[in-house]
Amino acid sequence: MLDDNTIVAIATANGVGSISIVRVSGKDALSIALRLSKKKELKPRVATLGTIYNTNDEIIDEALLIYFKNPHSFTGEDIVEFQCHGGIAISNIIMEEVLKCGARLANPGEFSKRAFLNGKIDLTKAEAIAKIIEARSEDAVKLLAKQLKGELTDFVNDIREDLLFMLAYTEVNIDYAEEDLPSDIFEQIQNKLNKIEEKLSNTLDASKRREGLIEGFKVAIVGKPNVGKSSLLNKLLNFDRAIISDIAGTTRDTIEESVKIGTHIIKIVDTAGIREASDVIEKIGIEKSIEAVNEADIVIALFDNSKALDEEDRKIINLLEENSHKEIITILNKCDLENKFEKDKLENFVSLSTKETITPLIQKIEHILDSNTHSDDMTLVSKRQVDEVENTYSHIKQAFLPLETGELEFFAHHINEALESISNITRPYEHDQMLDVMFGSFCLGK
Image (cartoon, rainbow, N blue to C red):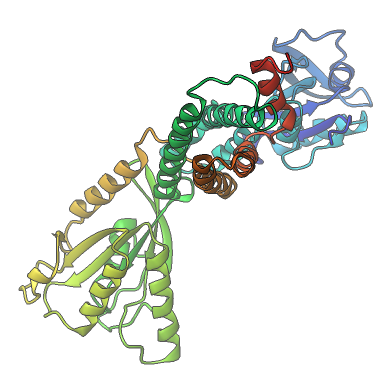
């Protein structure tokens, strides 16, 4: 429930900067701002320069005050922003004076929570706000900006509208069978059901392909010991992160680092060489390597051009076959040395030497990432959203059979469940919405 306390928080990051913002929201926001600035009024949406005083009438700072009158504000309440000079000391002092005037410190996310409870944003926009602040790549920002603009909300509303239509007509057919219904109503419902199923399926597929967009796509480097994995990692990072040695098995644990390629952030995982382990520690490292491959979005598999294919290479090839559904880049490394590897055992490999240039590999990674991110398909940005869409999809799939067999009570049950799940993405569904459609569309009991 929404309380009526006035809240305050510093809205900018800690540190030294040119401007710091102290945000106040609630019924007393304006009176507190007038008290601290000694002004008689603040015009809404007009930046007003004023001197800020403490409760002892001592000058704190000269700042801009901007007043957003309810309901035309982010939270839907009165908001005043103090835009003071940067520096944690000044903003802290102003915040303390606001607290002395009767406000309380805002809880984490409370401004967005109030915006949601007051109907200013839905859950999709709240999640987008939280994630866009933490976004580390241009692609993530673009995706989240689309969700912040309401793309996912529109997607959900379109599906909700169709589901309400199905539910309303179904309920009428169950409860008012004697009423005249359009002759093609079940054909319309079938068509809408097919379109929703396709839309949800495409969304889930696109979201799974692009789930690394926010946190960074995971790229695992795999190969037998001493094939050049650590050298490749260092080359990608452009500094010596991993120890390089001619001794096989130098890397005994996974090493994870982030790097930007094109507009994408990727998490590179350098794994321990996969072979028969000689001790317990190495065995654990190899198990973690296999786990990293299973979790990766892209797998870079290295083979040594200067050595003949052996049993350890075959283990890598088998591991790639088990993960054939993933994006796999096969590298034949050390191509500056005499060829001894059986090239016909590899498909679509890239020849390079980590001692020279790895540009062909970088171009290939960027191409894969571009193809996965540049899409018009709706993308879900949180596990909560994915779970709700999966639940919706499941109930849509289950609704086809009872519709075909005329078991309308079971059909209505699945449509109800689908409606609740899809609505949870933005704002929980209320049964009255179905009744509005039902009684607004038909002349019942005539």
